[in-house]
Image (cartoon, rainbow, N blue to C red; front, side, top):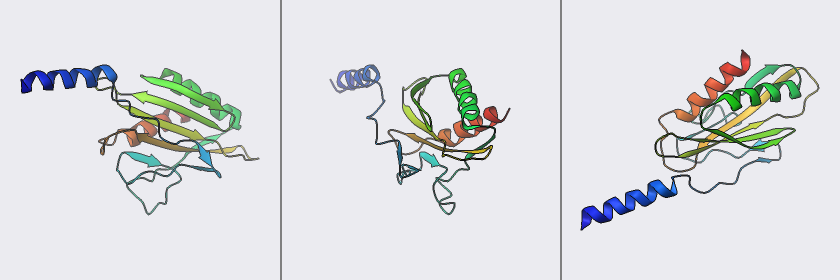
Length: 149
């Protein structure tokens, strides 16, 4: 009996997916939402003293429109990425893991500037769970490398 209940429960989890609910995201007073206490999030606007969550923003030479176009090109080529929001100064993407269907929310913020040195602030966080085994940090570093090419 216990085995049947376990199989049914596991099957229902897989059918429903492990997406979790969408947390509060976006830009508030020029800031992406801070990371929660769990280690499954990185944010370029976190204090550098918070080594677990802090990550460098993406630097781009060109206009904000060029930076956004390049980033969108990289994101469209990424596996299991769903671009959800595209605005003048903000992009939000949902990345879904292949096996368990976990969803990570990834955000990019393009603050206004008059120079051709664009800073793209980033936040990448898992919706559920505690550890992400470094996946969010690794994803941002891959995106950074592809945007700079």
